[in-house]
Image (cartoon, rainbow, N blue to C red; front, side, top):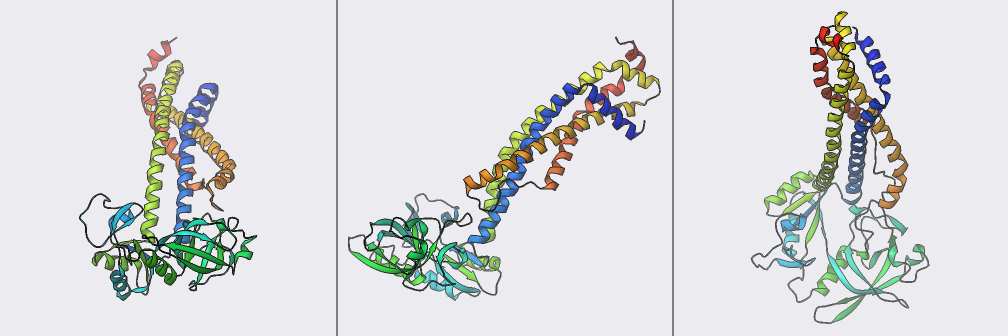
Length: 421
C-alpha cells in the first residue's frame, strides 16, 4: 500500500472513532498548550532582559568591587576583620577606598571611573514644603534615564540634580517643567549629630520607565563630585569615609572582557554587561525548566493515553487486520498504518494546543504588559520556528507511542484474526 493511501485510510479510521480521537488529541493538546506558552514566555523574557541590559548598562562598562558577595558570590557571614571592611545593606563587605580608585584610574584601558556612592539624606525639602526621605546617588549617563523634563548630557553639572517625578507632588510642583530650575534643600546628618544643608538646582526630572532599573527609585542623582562630597560629609570621622561598595570603569580602546581579566588579575571582582545578561538568562532558564517539567508530565500521561487508544483500536479491528493481511498486505504495511494513525493524533493535539496557546497569549499580552510594566515589549512572544518545532516534537512523541500497538497489529495471525468475533 502506498504512503498516500495509508494517510487517507488512517484518516478515515480516526474519523470513524471521532470521540476517542478527539479526547486523545485533547490530552496531547494540554501538553502542547503548556509547552507553547512556556517557550513564548521564555522568548519574551529573554528579549526583555536583553533590552533591560542595553538600556541600563554601557557595553564598555565593567562593574568593580573587592568582595565577591557584592555580585552574589562568596559569603556575607563572619569574616576576619580588616580595615577595608565596611557596612552596606546591613552586611559587612570589603570596600573600595580612594587608593583603589586611583589605581583603577591609572590602569591601561580605563577611560573613566564612576564612583558609585549611595548616601542616605536626613531629608529632602524645599521652601514651603514638607520633609521627605531619599537617597543621593551618582549620575551615570550609561544608564540612559528617561527624562520627563529638562536636559542632561554625558555629565551632570556640579550643584544640580536629576529628580524623579515621584517627588513632584510631595514637594508641591505643578508639573515636571515647573520643577526644572528650582532649588532643593538636602539635609545631611553625621553619625554624631551635626547637620549641614546642601542646595541643588533641578536640572531634569526623570520618569519611571519599563527599561530603567534605578531611576524609578526615590532619590536624587548628583554629579560625581557632589555625590563624593555628600558621602564624605556623612561619613566624616568614621571607617566608612572615602569608601564605596563598588565602582564602574569604562573601557577605552580595549575589549571590556580583556579589561575585566586585568581587574581580576589585580585581585578585584569584576562583572561586565555580558555577565549580567548571562545571569538574567540563567534565571529565566531555571524558571523555564520548572514549567517545562509540568508540561512533560502532561505529555507522559498523553503518551500512555495514545498507547491505550491504539491498543483498543487494534482489538476492535482484529478482523479487519486479518482481512488486510489475507488479501496480501504485509506486516510492515500494517504496522505503518497504525503508526501513521498515532502520528495523526499527535499532529491534531499539537495543533489544537498551539493554536489555543497563541490565541490566549495574544489576548492576554496587553494585560500582562500593563501589569508588569513591560512598555512596548510583550512577555509572550510566539515564533513560527518554535511552534513548528514543537508540533513536530509532539508528532514524534505520539509516533513512538504508536510503535507497541503497531507491533501487536503486525504480529496478528490472519487466520486467527478472521475467526475473531
